Length: 115
Length: 114
Image (cartoon, each protein chain N blue to C red):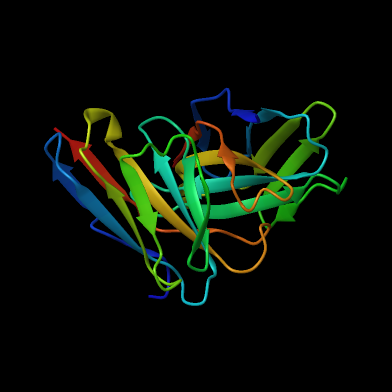
């Protein structure tokens, strides 16, 4: 079974600064996908960014980028130029290739962006 | 709004009662997932459908839980003889096509069992 660990329950960052959220996972699989989801207060969870394990290049989506270290089983999320709207809970998730979309989630990191 | 919708948004019930939740996915999304999220934890997979077929159920889904997607469109999740441990947020997500495609989540139904 796969496990996903987010070791930072809470983090805060000043507006316009950069913050990095950590995620590690444990798996014996070689082919899988990793995701970061954002869950704003009282709002729906949305996908922020995703990474295929076979790709060495780190994924980037505007202000969001990841540092994927496959050997270390690490998948951190960097948010640049933090905005107040980035305040949310962030979940890291793992999905085994061929696992029909079932994801294993970490317990989340609550990020607060301060003005 | 063409996103995933869930009803009701909140449900308070007494232990032992039955409850049913509904999820309306994005139109034409063939896959539909149910997750449970307890306070302070990430979502846990419960079950998923491809069209009307329920293809997998988690061991978390006890015999008191049943899910349906009768015409491959909306889905219902029923919990019979609710227990206090069933209190959680129940999330629905829909997806088009393959497993790697984005899952779109609904706002969830928060269940409180007294």
